[in-house]
Image (cartoon, rainbow, N blue to C red; front, side, top):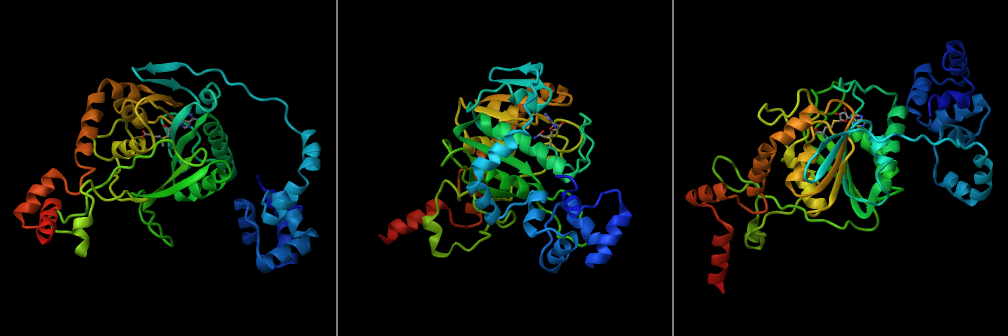
Amino acid sequence: MKNCFFKALGIKTTDRAALLRFSRKSAVPMDRLAYYNRNNILPTGKDLQAVCNTAGITETQLMLTMGIFDDRLRALLRKNADSIYQFIENFQDAVSTEFPMPPLALKTKLGRLYQGDCLSLMQHIESDSVDLIFADPPFNLNKIYPSNIDDNLKTEQYLSWCKNWMDECIRILKPGGSFFIWNLPKWNTHLAGYLNHRLTFRHWISVDIKYTLPIKGRLYPSHYALLYYCKGEKPKAFHPDRLPMDICPHCMGDLKDYGGYKNKMNPDGVNLTDVWLDIPPVRHRKYKKRNGSNELSVRLMDRIIEMASDEGDLVFDPFGGSGTTYAVAEIKKRKWLGIEIGPVDDIIVRFENIYEDADHIERIRRNINCLITKNDLKRRIENGWWTPDSVRKKNLKKV
Ligand SMILES: C[S@@+](CC[C@H](N)C(=O)[O-])C[C@H]1O[C@@H](n2cnc3c(N)ncnc32)[C@H](O)[C@@H]1O
């Protein structure tokens, strides 16, 4: 979908003079025309009228050329599906690319790691065979990866690449399986639009992590978007953790006023919401498994794998990185499949020291699924605050 807007107007991208003429004739500034073209955005209001009149085309022609479909166009396409299919069948590319199986880089008790392109591996995975897929692709931020992949694609190229690997993920996901995608909100708005036609939307989870410095003229970007979909009506596995209530780390008092509801609170903790405030960025050397950024926290993967799979299930992550998904899956007794296009040495070393991740997960698990952690409970009692036991006893006395 490159330069579709200019194509519809009959302007060659390299022909600045033609663009200038069009801009003068339509009275739509050149930079605005360039903006519509660069982002494949349909003009609206007076710009739409001016552009169509000047180019001598209708709004429908413009939308078709730009590949933008509203409900009216979609209905027309559906109504004429047979004849449209007959027409396009003649143009279909008959050659489908076959990828060779990438080489195996690591085999563990429960998993296999390959080195190569995720698309080539997925071609060899059977349809409807994976229980949980988690994908953390490069964000197209022009970062330098050890694999030297091109992280500065044109928007349309990046989205088309994402659709390719998402299509394969959807194909290999079992009915009842869950699919998570970690990305910037900017990209996930597009990916969600695509997935909404193929899977069932469960949640858009906002994970509160600051990932850049404040940008002038913009709000400070402070969350990653974690898309959560399932294949079919509902997921086969869904066991979200419960979290401890918020407590002041100094006086140990409540940070929220629970009023008369203290005795109604679940001693196993508060419900997990779709805003996650407790996921740390992996910056500390102690936890980092490879140089550079992009490594996700063990706490995040522990939560996702626990929530959306069972022991013995098969977990797949198409973008290995430092292997966080694979290590957590192994520790949590899930089978796993993985692939990384760049060097895989860090993942192999990580597995040699997997007890470090196991210890980490054990510490995380000790402090969830309770309303007040063991440590906090002791200090809260010392400071004279209520506990689930004390409110329950008080209630019993009333009876
Ligand atoms: C954002 S990182 C993933 C980090 C990982 N979640 C972790 O916690 O360490 C994305 C990774 O995908 C890899 N990658 C990019 N394109 C790929 C492809 N086509 N197939 C397999 N891996 C790819 C990159 O080399 C990079 O290591």
